[in-house]
Image 1 (cartoon, rainbow, N blue to C red):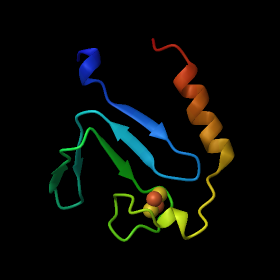
Image 2: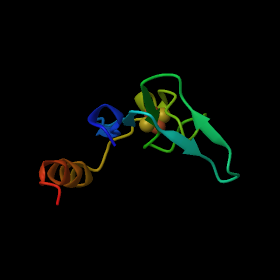
Image 3: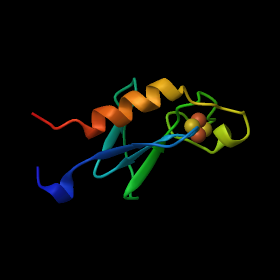
Length: 82
Ligand code: FES
């Protein structure tokens, strides 16, 4: 996979997971969703009306992320890949 094809997941503070790159989301029925946009947002708060995608509901439902989880993700991103 070339660098330009890499997928990147960005955890937004108190918000969704941004998935950047060429990804396909497959639901429990096997239906595939492929975005024409270079980035999709997956709901992390559980409140979206269009799961698995973020619809902005986290801004209204008071979602507060688990800081420890966010810290673990940040540390994992900093570790060298082997
Ligand atoms: S994270 Fe945005 S609606 Fe859930």
